[in-house]
Image (cartoon, rainbow, N blue to C red; front, side, top):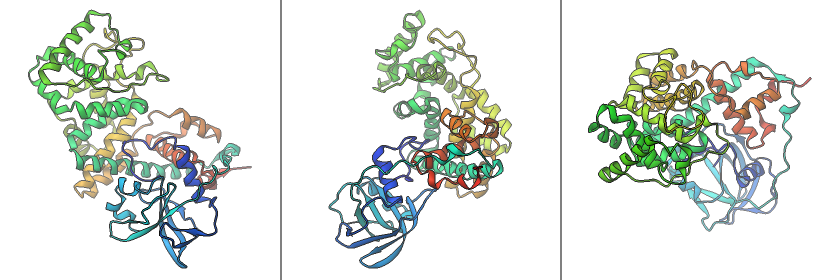
Length: 451
């Protein structure tokens, strides 16, 4: 459950729900009763060793040891809330799960076993309900610091884990959809930030780039940005209540966009989507309405070319990070139409479409994993290696406040994060241990200054 690929790119759940956290820790620290255990099929069970935490994709625990009907077995353990999650997450089609020897669930089930990709049956164990394990005090709160050289190595390891997880998910997206649509979805994912990414991706699926380009094909050059604004704002629900209040709806320009949207909607059968947009706790620069208006300019810059092809051409011909950043700035930062005094924008407008920190994060979290995934599909190890090398060169992007507070707690300054992959590694490590309250297993422990 913890290590399976979720249905979002991009981030693991920053906060696992209490039931998942409790189940994970309960198994790891053997907080459930240890006597008279039975599998669903009635076989006796004894847990010798719950195994070690698996940081990579695949089963949640590696090298566990259990007695089943008196026979010692060594292998992997997968944990889910429900037994059917094994199939929902498609583990039965994944060879990485062929070494699972026990499926641990919390909800009762009538199914005594699950089946692996190798067509082997695996017993199911319903873990007895227990109270939430006692919270573990974070060891890092008492540290004076960590060895910075060792810290780089630890964060680099988790940066690789994070990069591979994203790349593997994108690879599946490309297989199920196409490279062009997947890249378009990644663009909108990056525009959405954490609070609004799902709505942006839904917009990408319902208003695909191919359909947008067909409309632009018959649109005058001077009208393209206004047409794109009408398509995006109208489909996203910003022309109607309740979201029209987030843009300047009293202007003549808004009325023109509204009229254009009515015409486009009927002519091209465009939907008005019932999406949920979040504003609470978001800086005005990141408001989804502002991002949609910026997106109109970005799409107009790409038209009539496919963004995925342009990006692939770029990274295949440049190994340095400066051409990549310049390309991103040209397409994603520099306005090509009304922006600073845009008649629809309220509050903060700014001089660029996207900030530099967001640009670095989109390169690291979205576009380079996309190129790695393409290389993997082509069985091109050289491309995959060059993409990994390039990912290590990208300058630092945004440091989430939770990471700044966490690392400052053990005297690791922001200047430590000279490259973005170190920030990404810190995020992954924090999710993997702090987010699950597994401080006792934190790999930074060995390099801490506790004097």
